[in-house]
Image (tube, rainbow, N blue to C red; front, side, top):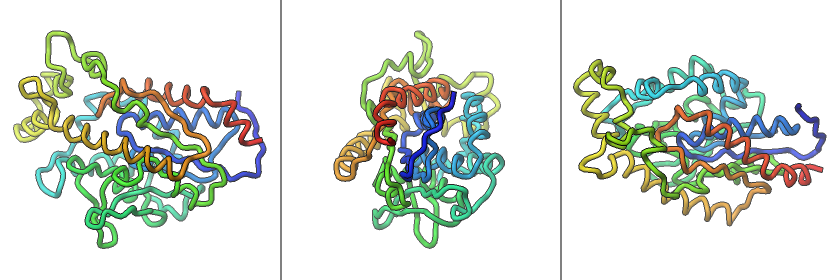
Length: 309
């Protein structure tokens, strides 16, 4: 049952970065709605920009439906591989799908104030994307260095906002929020996981993400894409894959940046879903992530309601 909460406070939600863990944002927003809280403003970083953009643009139901039906085959299918342009994935397929389900809109025309955070690759400065194309802003915010190619925006090359502000509380306040509820997906980021469980690998095969791609489907990939995917996702003599090394290093950095930014500009409420069991590219684990997003709200529900009264 949805409650009706009356408050004069302008409520902001800051949705943090976290790759596949970001589907927890869907559970967070649904759980907040169930206790009568609908954001007045939303800021998002990386995957948080994608979920927040869908919510602010009125296409949240479409995104939720798509996320809940994602398969591993779908995920690999979105990898339009490239060896040029500063990344191994161009991202056109993913954004093309987002355009189909979220439609092209301008940020300033959305029903809710929204902004995404990205990073200027040359200067290292934080960039707030508060106007212009919604999809272009989302694409810039999710441009994980080395994986997604950077985005040229108004003469600047932009990459993932998680490099400078993984949980954009400051941006949320700048949009006019009186109270900020922040979602930090990095709480147990560095918890050592049982890879054979988290990545769904059988006990007698490699634990790599590449091992999850069915052999019958690999045969239909082009030789070039097959080789690139194996290098990106596969293990070499038991060592981590290229993607695991790259993303693991960024995780360590983002964990430190998140701690520093939240200490300097703390949110009024911090939601911390426990998502250490969800792997780097396990976007097909939406059910688990969404459920934990809901639980993160329930754990501090009394604190949230006290703040609003």
